[in-house]
Amino acid sequence: MVAPRLRLFYICMFATLALTLFSGVSLSDDGCEGIGTPCGKQCCSSGDQLIVGRLGVEKMAASKDQLVAYQKWLNSKGVYYPKIDIRYIDGDRGYGLFAKDDIAPNELIIHIPDTIALNANNIRKIAPFGEMLNKQSKLKPGDELVLFHIMEKPNPKSVFKPYLDMINDRSMTPLITHGNMALEDLPSVMRPLWQVERRRVEESYAFIKDIYSKVTKDEFNFAYNAVHTRSYKAQGNLCIVPLADMANHSLNPNTYQFRMDANNPPLYTIMSSRAIAKDEEITVSYGRLDNSLLWFMFGFHLDNNPNNQAGIPWTFLLDYMLKEGLITPPVLTFIHDNPLNPVVFAKKSGRISEGFRENVEFLLTKADTVAGQPEASREQLDARTNEAIGSILRRFRAVVAQKADNVLKDYEFLWRDDVGSIDAVLSAMHL
Image 1 (cartoon, rainbow, N blue to C red):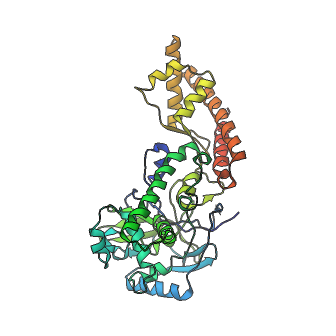
Image 2: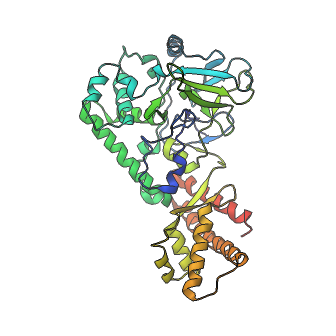
Image 3: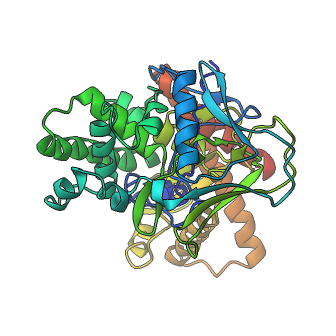
């Protein structure tokens, strides 16, 4: 089904490496420096079709009075956005940013002072958080922001009340809604990261509950989702920037973003990357993330996402090559001193990751060594490598397609996307 366009501010670029490394990476509190590399705020613009599985999405849009109060609050805090209008899109998508007038290329369109950014330093200046947070050592920066949202959201006297009133969406990421899912329903390369992040969610709730015993699980889930889909990392702190987190994602964004640290106070800045027509939506890019990461982090995926890729763990690759008779068990002894790339990828673009060819070539040459065969020429090795890659992908495709036919509907797209990526490579390489 066509689902809400979950609004998106900046996603951490390191997330593009998460599936490659899958070695205990935390999406919660690690990320990139700078405003142009997001960790969150869910959504895509009107040009991109966004799909959400059955995640219990519920949108409760802020009222017009709350929007007016929010705009007055932004103005009082020195936020510069004279050509930007905050508009209600619809019940599914909530609010977005639009151009009031024509905007020229490379025009500065938004300035947001660091003083209203929600980060560990700024919330410590607000009672009672300074004293409360300085007395504990368990909470990470993301946990501190979650605690802030939990306590301040219902506080009628909060200095951030106009901002917090605008956060009314109840769309949740699968880390919250599908926490008890069977690992077997996920593609193999996603499973270690899923386990790490699920433990992190439970730890966060336990730490916060220990400090603020009144918190309910629903309050935690809402706050955790709000923080970790709107934040990015700057100056060592996880940070949320009001107004900027309303910018929707596009595969072809019309702005770029950066932080001006030399200014006092520092400014979060958005500039146009091309001419923007009046009434056009203001959009940002959140990186080249495939659907598995989009869904994992934000609960949505894009139709025909060009960044999709099917990951094959090195253990699978070895198994397939053994079954195809391309290598023999003695070849495995060479891996101890020459570890393989942990995950190789078949991409929707029709290309394979460099590590894919490297792994296969290495194993084929060691197979020749074990068999006492003379060293193959480059042309011979290239031909054999291509043939081996085709055999591996066809075997992997059969496994993935079978899983797609039998997995729960919520997760079927993960496997279908992998099939599509494999088919793209097989077609492009004429295998």
